[in-house]
Picture 1 (cartoon, rainbow, N blue to C red):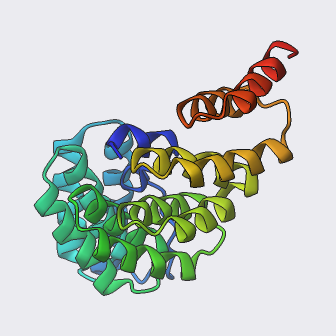
Picture 2: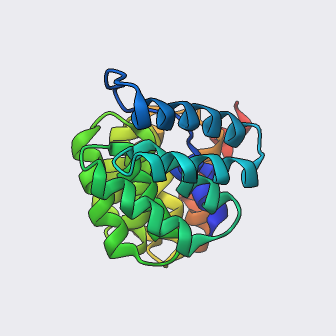
Length: 229
């Protein structure tokens, strides 16, 4: 599975710049200054001014080392600059100081996924999913990492949790095709077709897979259904 596959599911958690922390009461001094720097750093990050964002967020993290979102957004900025090692350090710090921060765990997990550390990615993403069980990006990231470990049934369940049964089946089917499990891919696509009989993309994939697997009658039937659309 390539990074292009990952992009199909819009699961690039490392690109999120939303502050999901509940704001603590302002107490002035260093914390107030840190939060001001955090807000300015976030704005710079959203504007694509990465060097300036890194400088601002580094100052925020230095002033308040327990400010999880400063570490989290600093890691996002590093990731966008391609500085993966520094990003992982900042993600890990964000998780360390904000253990209930689902987005920090998601970002760390996705960064680990990109670097090929799939088992560690799954562990972090499972923790994130427990904290935010309805977050589709986290669930999609978890499913992608599980595909890399060959855990396709688990991946299907998480794709389905993120977008429903139909989405889960059409998302996991190409992953199965990539590893030569075309019979299982066909099962998922057939189930998807039962949910949406007129879905042209599903019919096209089925016709192709039926043909490759010597099921000419089924391939012809799928093509005929396509022509009737």
